[in-house]
Image (cartoon, rainbow, N blue to C red; front, side, top):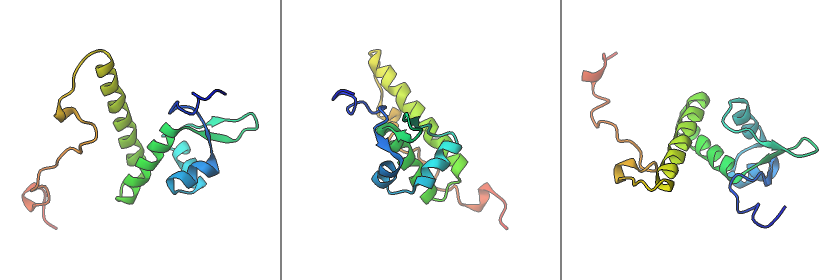
Length: 124
């Protein structure tokens, strides 16, 4: 392992316990994200899970969405799509393209302010 390995966001540098501590979750939560297909940690020679910084960023985002009331499968899908969009944006820039402020993956899509009004659904 060289010094640039830890500079690589995809290098599996963190044990399960350390990874869980870093993002404030339990090891069981990380295992549940693996079972849901969001992250697949590398395995050490001894079979222990190893997580990358990128995987921890995905896990932290999933935790945020769960805390906001989203179901696990939906949160994993949203995180996967956000990650793919960010990768597509990086590729566009790598190829010399440009992005507008409307393309910013970090700006949430605004919903219509009247969405909760009964004209959009039947009142109970």
